[in-house]
Length: 412
Length: 78
Image 1 (cartoon, rainbow over the protein chains, first blue to last red):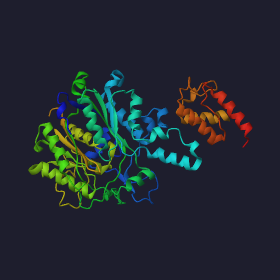
Image 2: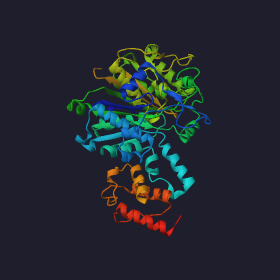
Image 3: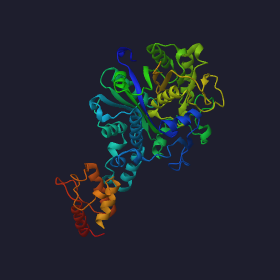
Image 4: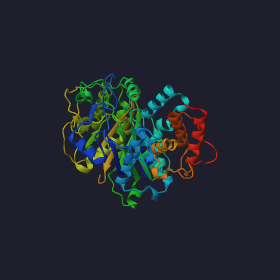
């Protein structure tokens, strides 16, 4: 599945909004990501000493009232606060006033995997402690995964074709893939895409741990090590990234600053988590649709979730697709510095790629302490400079749903 | 005393302090939606131990709610 049927329209990115453990706003975020400052820490939001997983990427300095209308703060969960903040930052960055747009031609395409555990824990407490009649009236509308999309549309009066996706680690990639498609197919002129997560609660962390994919390492410096032989699993992050997508025509008409263009996207599913054949096909289709060969990719932002199987399968798929270019192409996993963002993943990686194009700096991942013979790629483990015109972004879910995108700079 | 409690509940909902007056109507003036109205009833029960029905068809003022709370407290003294 790809975009080749809809090549008459073009989709560009004109705004970036980031609320991330590594920084609020693209400038703070990028300073930390391009210099390799990790935001992975021991959990402070609750006493995690009795929990099997004790580290995460937490956002420590976020004040909802700075971004969210007062009346909406109490009605919504933290993951929606993050989404509202990232949407506002993205719209400001795009210099786009939605009041001047046809609201039926603006859509919201988000990913969210976990819903709102902060308010769900409160609801459980009210139910079991005070009885059913005392459960807060926002429980139903605040916890569920479409709440971020819903409240962003309410906040800005958006009425165009919109969807939310729950697809494990590829939730955000699903939103991006189909959000782009909604413009290519002519449904929307403007799309807010990305996603949001806030799973760092007692219950949320417990549920994620039960997937068997989370790292139980207690040392924040060594907990998240994608592609390292001693990798032990995923470290969760939280936050939201929202990108403003527009048809090229719409962006040019209003004289928007264009960060880059979605040149291609491909979605495939492997038969098992041990197989990467369909992931290879996703990357090959994305290259073909973009009309380029592997040598034209300046930076590859890998899924690199940090589990033994997924990283090995992905590294081998990259090696197979890039062949003789594999030792050269810089590969980075910036999520190693702030945790996996599930619904907000992919859009965050696309943002890293766009900021690399803008600044000529590459996003840094953690140092590789023990090289894995099954994962031999050119990892960006130190601050580096390089001219970047085209990036590839991969996303892969636990049950092996794959997405691969190629994004080009304005000039590419 | 009841008005102070009601005011605290409304401020938690994000209502501006200057809008909280005895004559302010829940829907017409404060623009409360049904969930916010339910939350006021829940908090009055939690803080003052009274059941007050606020989902009436008739819009009501904050002063009227205080009267209902005082009546309910008189019927069920703590």
